[in-house]
Image (cartoon, rainbow, N blue to C red; front, side, top):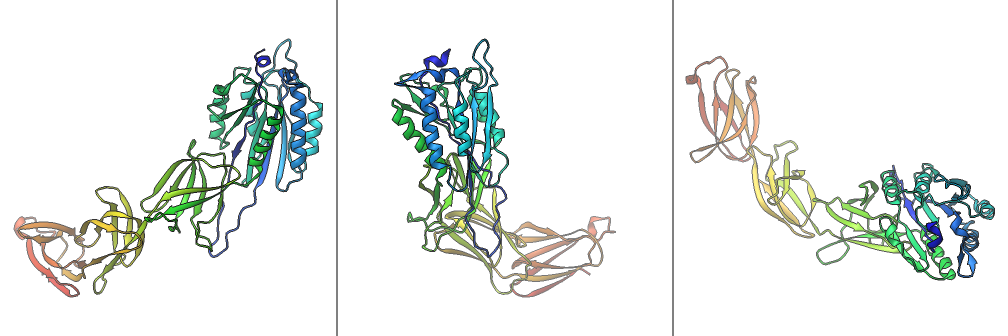
Length: 464
């Protein structure tokens, strides 16, 4: 049997968060959500665990050290433990059972003694259906919005039933369970290639190292991993704030967290708590958005995530009286056709520093290119004061307004065919109005008049 020639111990630590629906009411102080940590131990009881490791039987060493670890953590608050075996119920001979896995102790508080008792009852028996076991353990975690879920697999070998742990990892990813294994091998044989798709390999030569590594894994599972997101200004300082940011799972694309970035009372980026076993893709919802990929965290420590996000302001104002209602301005990155934002006159909005092209939705429209936004300063764009035009027609009929640009006619808008009287707000300039009565079926009935619009004044155009 292949496991007889593999001297190794593998720990797989996998954490999945389902922090959905966290909401913060306006003017209410945000409180840190208390997480329940759920640790599922999967213990390999296959026949190869009866082999000798240094001076002792592998099964005996694993039982003793795991019992010590469980005894040291079982009274911790907000902790639930569960215990599953593989290869413990069916003998290897005459035929291996590739579905030999069972949940002996389901999740619950104060489960330490139950797991210690279960450890005493198992003996090395069967084979190693590793992929099948990992797939089944996904059902051991009942739905929980605020749980920190951990899997620790202890085994002395690799898959023996033709399963593919890499494919299982992908399947669990699709369910929102993220496998981020720590793999610790004992002996001279390196089987890290079998686990490179889902984890990291560590070589362990001594029994004492086994205990130390298990302590590290437990510590990382139980300790909160904190982080701060530094939104860096042009001087390299983390002063930018008050913008939403979204953390995605880099592998699955699943949205994990939404936060509104905040500076704390000391003026520093506030601390957030993240699952350390997810590779993140961060989107900071500035205008335009800035992103950072392949973010990995050091478990149990405070991490800093730096993102360049220097910002300034655009402010639009109108000279004189504003006769427009909710006048909008389309903002685009310079030489980019995609709309970033529609901002309104008399408002101020923050943008990443750089150049922008704007389209002001006046009649006629005003275009400006290369408007510069500088850090911590406000760029003000002033829109010329408009005039008001009252147009009276003798009856319904197609009517169009044009701006005179030398000999060129620039279309501005079409009027309502059926309306006998209309009010328009137009930018200052020389215009022409072209009208034909609805019942005038010959072109000669066309009326072509010119008029001038002056800022802040009213103009009457009578086509009677």
